[in-house]
Length: 270
Image (cartoon, rainbow, N blue to C red; front, side, top):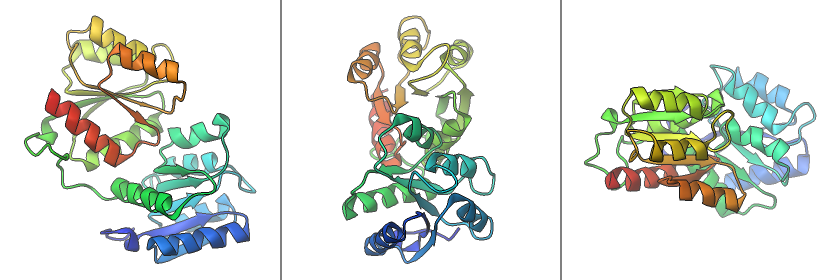
């Protein structure tokens, strides 16, 4: 990967079986400022090329001849060599069966069809945030010593935890503990002090809402800030989460700019 200062520095692989669609996406990327783009018709050829030359960003459609976009990003995250490449999905797909693996495996953005140039630029800016370490300071939080903050990451997906950790590390946070579900997290919270809990909503054994209720009503760390990260769209469930006492809710994909603002608000309040 190159030394990145802006969108113009990004190297992008486009994975799209339709020649017309790939030409359109490549043209939009050029309009957004991307100078280096390569096009692939299937996931297999794109993955092979990644091992020869690492791009900064992969822009893929959902339905490829040999795999789905979810399969592609999962295989990228499963390899030490390609796991830190940013991933943007462009698709008209709305079925959670296909979208959830993309969210869980750490995408920078999911763009519906048709998308605007402004939306594409925002997705590229989010990818740049993911790829380029920040100055180590959270907006409006210059007095917060991020290197001393202890963060508990809770998600049943190891890949999702790794993605969240990368985003937080880019902001300057260094101390992490991890749990696969709310039950494990509750045990860690009983034994160790944390400055922040970042948790998924949907998990086995004890979900994010139940974990939040446990922390607020039974834990000796009842005031610890809790950031809920979720692809949940059911408004009644989200309302129940907020009522349980979360400090902030962030959608999947986990956007660095949104996280930065939420953390600044939560940690300053703390």
